[in-house]
Image (cartoon, rainbow, N blue to C red; front, side, top):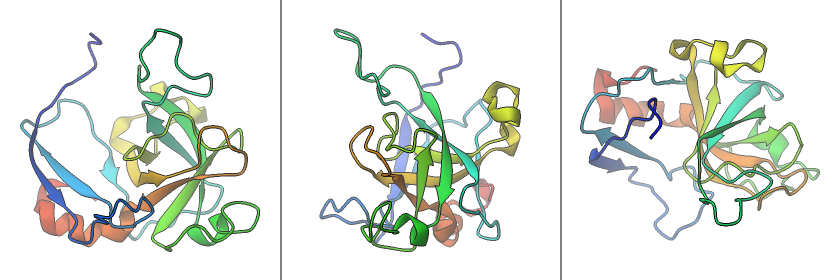
Length: 189
């Protein structure tokens, strides 16, 4: 087992009261908070606060357990190791443009990320984070995790590798009040 891997159990879950119980994936309220049994021993990203402005084209990082563009190896695990992928931030208005989702992004509280290949991601799964990371020269290993921020939580996207189909994320800044209310001073915004 990987020495850096830390397995935690969940003590309790708080689900947003407006969670889309009908399994509608593109709801900006499909968000939950997990309280862990123990404090994480690794540096964890802060939540991007509502006073921080992102601009379309800004470099972000998506994290996910997906198999990648080559798919899983025959006989190998479907979900192997955590992977990181550089993505560009795209606001909902631009993501809804005819060249991208053509009006299919239902809410301004959702944002998008598009990878360097200009295709839908093959590593991102629902619930995966979109991060603003301290990664000088896009080298995550040389960055400092104390300067990392969660920007969004993945809620939908096109099947792996589709051209011009950004992944959709809940904009975490839209939920900062709800997070503060449910976490108090235990979360850094």
